[in-house]
Length: 85
Image (cartoon, rainbow, N blue to C red; front, side, top):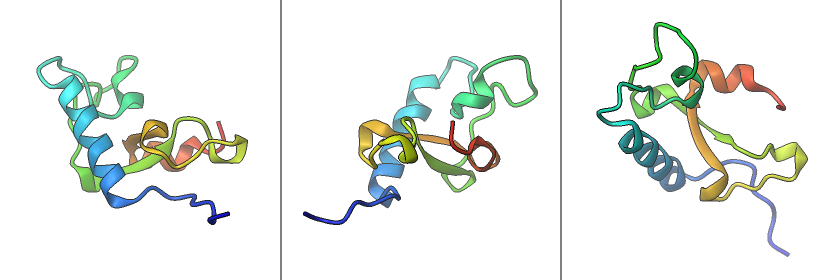
């Protein structure tokens, strides 16, 4: 059995970033899903790839894998504060 990988590879992160960014293009929404909700100063900001981190939609500790379908890009500060939710 191959080892389980907790981190996302660069290709997966770049594909997720591109999909998220394209999905909100022209909609006045942020490409960070957590910034896009509510009324905050960053709700329409498009972040550069370097300002974002890959996050597990279904958390790693609860069985989420590091596949492309379980990857979303969050603003780095959101990802670090996200924890095990």
